[in-house]
Length: 150
Image (cartoon, rainbow, N blue to C red; front, top):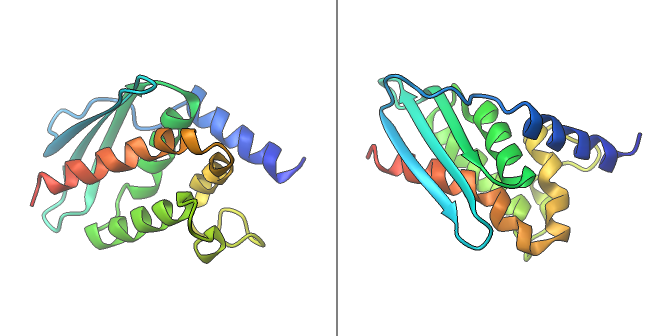
């Protein structure tokens, strides 16, 4: 199995079996994101601990496999992390998706998944620049939800 096939399977798995989809009963913050060009929608709800780390996350929405799998992978990656750790992960994700940058500064091609976990499966989206917005939508919505708690 090639690396591209593996990445494709990871994306399909997260799309078909999204993680952290249950609404939160006591969300501390919430944000909604929409990509009007393609119709992708994402809602992020967070329960935060006293130190600001994410105790629980809910990510729901509808749209293409890229936006929805990105949301699922993101929810797994940031759960339990502090704000500083989340900011670092968001920065690494954005750098990985930046067409003007060199993603090898962020991910290790010799050890796939070692830096961003399953999220690295979205690296191939760079080949389709119009789809980068789909992958970024959940991350932008997460940042918005966190900004509302400042």
